[in-house]
Length: 414
Image (cartoon, rainbow, N blue to C red; front, top):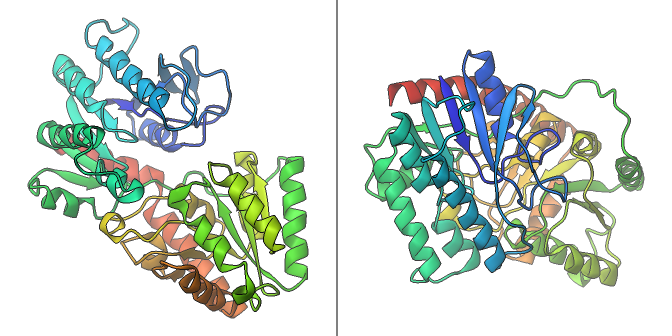
């Protein structure tokens, strides 16, 4: 079977941090299948500023860039980028390069939902099976995270595309463990469905490559905090409004947090629109908060391993997260045997399923503060047991080879 995997923000080694398309394609190769990944020539998750100006092979995985304009932020220019990606895919239906292997299945992954339209055209052209892969539930993610009005024209466009996808897909897949419940609520309970989570990637082995200077300096800071008797809570990922970081920082600043100051240090690794504000708050409060910015992806595992807990930052949005979550950082944490603090209710997530940390809904800084006090008071032996359970669960349930096998079997049956 040959799969065309469409993902606007696809990454991989040397491309970007969203490795899922790469790992799936590599796993399919091991099972005797193959895949071509279609990605935007420019998107904000790319490692380089220049964009992707040509096709490339990465460990045998073919990446085909679709021409898209540059943008910054979340304004009109980003919408134009989405539209260009969708149009570029539509052009393939009338002029496919002769050296592109024809697909047996086309997977339209939904970092945004609009590629479902050209994906269906392409599926009909090649008599291929059409798979709609739910990553974010559109438009529910927009209305619940941003508070957008359900009658907003863009929300309505997303809702129409969602209905189109569920109606015409031969198979619906999702990284969310309970997305089948959402399908049922939308009236598509009989649609074939398969859960195919973001997997664990490569199992950590002894690291031979030297750490970057940024990572080495950060680990030295973490070790100093631990030597001072503080528990280190690490957040590795985007610093944006959906990540619950303002609530976290508010919980550890101010007079109410004085009892935490000597027991807990916060480390934030990554970048995003809230980075400047978080830095300003940390400096103003003289709180034990380290904001490190971006570090090379190859160094993330070493930084995680040096920490005591991983923070899987989310705002507690029950209407959205009742269908599950799929955070790449969970694999980063759990594979290193580091227990996790997840500040939402249990939702089929690996932390609650494996009893690999603290899973508790948090809505206010005071609730966050209470949860953090609970974390720092956990005995070291209990923390270690949580981490070991999480790692074992991740290796068993989130192995990409088994995920790819399950995915291929579901496509074959669709």
